[in-house]
Length: 433
Image (cartoon, rainbow, N blue to C red):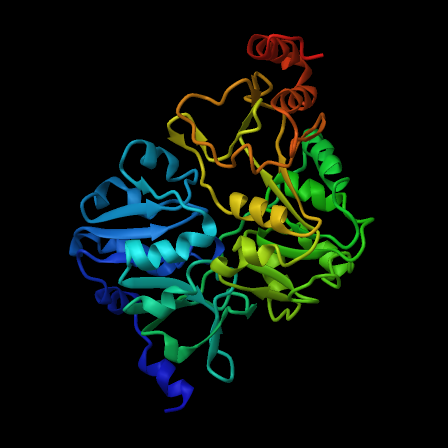
């Protein structure tokens, strides 16, 4: 049977496709820019046909459909990352959250959660019958190996990306053709604080380094400061629009990488149509499963690996809190620890945790004597290397407890340094300076 016959035999309407899902099923979906929204909307419209279906996903850009009041008892939502639309539901117990290092998520799905159904977005098939997973390979790629039912929303707006994103139509059970623009994550203007942080972070990046960046103001500010660098590599779980110009100008050319020479390696992207277009049919960028991209042992194979991540709070020991505020699950662990450890293991590698010195319009210091009660430590003090704020760089690796605290006080906001010095004296029985 030629691929066109295979594909056409598996075409279905959304209403027909969702009949493959049964009450009591566990379902995993792709997230972010490739969330299969067309199929999800129809599934929610038919919520009365289902009971006790658990949907597992990660960072959703728009509304979280599975936490609407009317679907209670029909659908429950389990997330690996709290987003703006799910945070309150997780706090109220309407939705649930599973904490996990990002590179271990595929294993947790396969061995613990055990979904029967996977739903993802793909590009239309090419002339040889291959579709692409587009912006998201992450954990969704491996679900094709073990889920009993594999449903794909075929969307012409999904870019045809390379690497492990390429799959044959024979690997799926059902295709639903729904064309709709992908959800976008636009860049926001870079603040003066972010510009200052970006400059300090860029000063720690050298020609020939391999970098990992996320999305948001600080990563974009760092990208803006890298235009005088040469021969950078890119191995990152995710990126945004900020890397486009660096690749186009040859600043990121991956010429010094030990593995995947000449290729930028990603797990997923969060960006706009500009980024989707840049990825489309671009062989210089490869998408790979997150259990590979984020595996510290793989990351460490690139010499001079530099990871850059953000956080919510750091205490004077160097403990980093990135995903909780007290008992509130604010975001998720993501790949921070994966890359901090991978960069530490790398020959010549460095890890950077970057953050503004304050929160809540300057009324709260992010550098604190002790972390907020009930908050969970994301990155331990033993893993931390550099902490960066708009006031400078604190290098903590190998430092004594006193020297760590002194270095962090020096990059705290000036309005809070006196109080932190008092805390230092109370703890160590001597002046900080």
